[in-house]
Amino acid sequence: MLFLNFNSLPFPVLDTTHLTLRKIINTDAPVIFALRSGQQTMQYIDKEKIASIKVAQEMIQNMNNQYQNNAAIMWGISLKGTAPLIGTIGYWRIEKDHHRAEIGYMLLPDFWNHGYASEAISCVLDFGFDILKLHSIEANINPLNAASRRVLEKQGFRQEGFFKENYYYNGKFLDTELFSLLQIYRPKK
Image 1 (cartoon, helix red, strand yellow):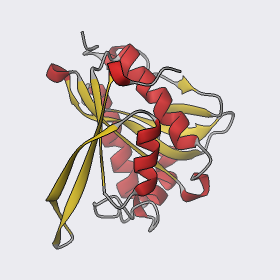
Image 2 (cartoon, rainbow, N blue to C red; image 1 turned 135 degrees about the vertical axis):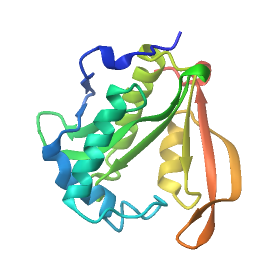
Image 3 (cartoon, helix red, strand yellow; image 1 turned 60 degrees about the horizontal axis):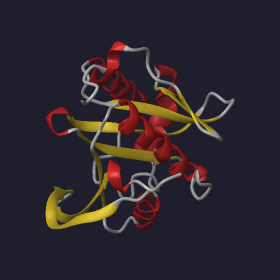
Image 4 (cartoon, helix red, strand yellow; image 1 turned 30 degrees about the horizontal axis):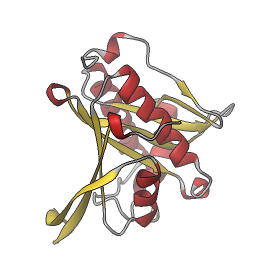
């Protein structure tokens, strides 16, 4: 049974070998702004870049409201023993009736290619399958995002679909790749 009221517990802080995943708070707004306005970080995120720290603060409030409403859970990623965020990860579009959620993640470019994305994803997959009792987890990526594809495949995700021109953004139709991981197919640790 899916744990329907995950917000009834204190916000779950998750630790890995190198990372701490924690609640995103208002003082994290500069990093959220950097993630959501940066050329490199937004290259494959087909959404408008945010324009200000104020918008980042509103995003944080929205993330926390979604958590309170059992609609999503987003963690800030920091290096273990440090406070500043290096990225975000979480579940949104949680489909409780279907025991399914979509995972999303972003890291600041200085922290790419260090294995942090894989480490954070692995930890959040454990939480999703073991605590939330999800049956499957999906990820949608821009087909040009080869790095994200590699990270997902490393975690056992399989491409389940390629949608041709299914997403309209910035005056053009874009393609989407859909990946999914069923709990029973998750690689053993």
